[in-house]
Image (cartoon, rainbow, N blue to C red):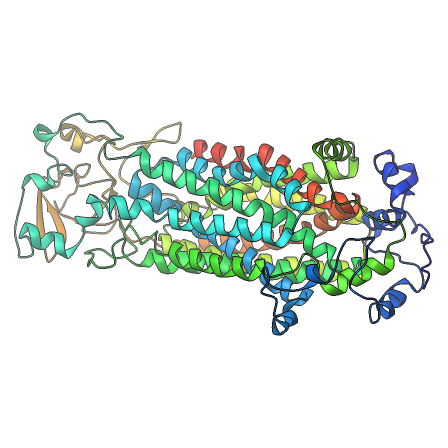
Length: 626
């Protein structure tokens, strides 16, 4: 059966690809690429009048083996090695792959959001500065940046799903590695001191007015203070472990976002790509929900669940079980990696369609390093790909720090606990899923031109800039904190009433509240307190020179910030919806602006630029600002 290979008429308003220098080279060896290039402007593939029908009819009778394409029955069967039973072949379909691929992406995003939700707890537990936290997060992208293009090039020549599965095993190892600091260093001395078990050891569970050395480090006792390094008690080892785990995570996920999505696009008809990608991305968008729910649950548990804390999870000194979620995540990744490795090199229906539609003779799948250099040079001259990539870079650089430190921002600016911040961030991310799904449906139905999608992106970004700027006027602040704010934004906590206490900022944050619930002090020392009474593990401080009644209770004063926090959440939901809708066309433009055989490398090329110019420096820069 002969297929009509005539190229469809150029859609109105579109530019003929022969007039584009950056893709002229493709038209000579890939006639169908002209059709694909039209998709850049119309997001639609204009097949010949009856090509889809002919291919569909042919796939009912065409054998799976085709010498021109070097695909045979062994490469289109589910299984591993010689284990390819007939009952397993029901899974050799694009529907099953979309589900498995989407689940892997969902849990990868869940791992990232779980790390973000527990970031402030890690800083508190291991005394990690924000700039180091930014490096921990950037290491994820550094790992992908270093190996992405090479691994993608090697994997594109072989069995793509097994390369991706190997990467997912590395992701699982990175999850288990993150538990090591808790096993090696335990919950920490500060957390132990806030438990009933610790109070029992000290013998302070009964009413007492103890002023033992155990409390001198937080009381107004200048004669007992010695100068010490502000970084005392910190360790570089936990930070190094977290950075190493993030590097492994980046290496493992790099193949998922390149080879994985390329395999998906290879095995579906081009006019079905928007819908299939929408389904896959919709599954992935559930990842933030799972990650933040994991984080919210884990951070509500005390860092050592076997102990009984004397404070609630709303107390700023609370350290949650940040390590708890990494165990189930690691196990899930191993299970999904095994499932993914069973998929064939090419799905049966896709292999049949390829055999019928090919008219250019045998395809040479062997590549050399010289070919790799030619591909990179070709992509570097593709103007559409470059502009699309740099738009993604700019978005990533501006958004990554905002997204990473959002839970911490809510904790500090709106007095939310770590678990509450994680849960609320999760609810906001649900809006992202709605925006992505809606935009994909609109694109599939109305098939807007790429110039319209680009114009929509401009409108969206302008709205986001205005919205983010408005955040500076929506904050509860810390007006009840005792002290004066300096012109540079820092706090001067020294007053006449505590001047002789020599407190300084070297004291850990241990807030106390005056009995009238009006003023929060950074620590008992800053309140001028000289005694402490411990009743059933709860501390009450006395002889406080900065408080009229002379007494203070541990913990920050309650603060109502409901109105401003609600306003902040409404604006954030609107911005997340707009932002997610603006990103919908980028993937389609990415695929249709390059030759089919360059798809995997083009994704890696964009990821390389995004990591080098956006995702790596972004978190570090934001961390330094914080």
